[in-house]
Amino acid sequence: MARLLTVRCRDIFLKGGDPTFRPARLSDFVPVQLAPTLPKSSSVFQTDVGESVPDPVKFLQQHGGKFIVYSVDVDQRVLGLVKVKEGIDIKTAPFLYQTQRANAEELLLLPFDVLPAVADTLTETLSSLKNIFLYNTGRCGSTLMCKAMDVINDVQAVSEPNVFQVIIERVCTEVPVTFDEKEEIIMLLRCSVILLNFYFLQKDPSKKVVCYKFRSEAIFIADLIQNAAPEAKTIFMYRDLAGFYDSNINLHFNGSYWRYLFETTLRLDVFFRVPARKTNLPIFKFFDEHPRMITCPVTHGMHFLQVSSWTLQMQKAFDLIQEDLANFFHACLTFKYLLEHKERIILKVLEKLDVDVPSDLDSSKIREVFGVDSQKGSVMQSERRKGDKVRSSWVGTWEKNLFSTVLEHFNGDVDEPDFVMPNTMMLN
Image (cartoon, rainbow, N blue to C red; front, top):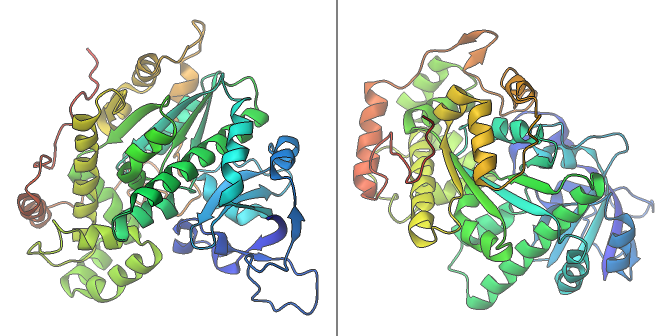
């Protein structure tokens, strides 16, 4: 039975810092107690918490414009949608899921067995809607790209719906999924996309294109997502390994080169920082213990995790292109070209994706987006830039040797730090 609960975010996520970057979980919320006998540690999965929703299809038809998909719990076999507090614009924040989590006031739990009926009913209202899926390596301007696309009259661009993360972790970090599990995952992905589309269409019926920019790890289930939404157009964004590494390491060490040098030289990151990352962000376990990486003859600290994550994500993108060129990717571009060409590259991408752009569009509105830090106010805001100053790169001879060692050990198609993906866009 579907249930509706009054909830609040757990305190740990309201204090800022690293916890805000943790993937979305339905356990991020606790029920607002209506009965004094319930313990403070009550779970949203307790059957005696909340009210039953006997007809979830009808409920969503009437209230779907208020509830947006948040996360899934495969063990409890429920999909969760949240309603945020009145007056909160979830699209203005750099990352959708963080705003959902911090401002949630109601949680709708839908059992897996009702999802196909919900999806089939809502699909009838979405025939005119077009999807774009923006895949990326991370730290490559994808949030900026998302905000720039949102300027276009017919486009809603949404940064990081996180319902996919639990599925990514299940596919990447557990035993290979069976055929039945794969079919269930595709069903969950299909229903999630439909529910997201229904929400955003209710929010602005005039915008017929919705672009979802995913967290970088989504590349590992891109084929499953495409199976769930075969009509969607796809983009892949990336940058060279040195730039990716430098941006990430600056972020993880809060812009302090001496902290980076101290921790990695004494291997403190191996004993403290890496285990914490692997616990809070299980995808890091995949990067560290991947069969082609686990025996790599380097210290498996934060520096190794960054190189491994870039290599595995780039290789997966390359494999997708080789296996299914029709769907991967309709546009492929680099961070360098985005910054160099700004509105020109944005308009070129939209053209390749068959998105109609008004002939009288004021392209200066797109250019304005490039003057603002797209992740400002979040824990992911770049540590390389302070005001008008950009810190010098931390990538030196040692780091370059590390890149070469890892890539040589990996022995894949992605074999250079400045690897160029096939079909990468160029402008004359």
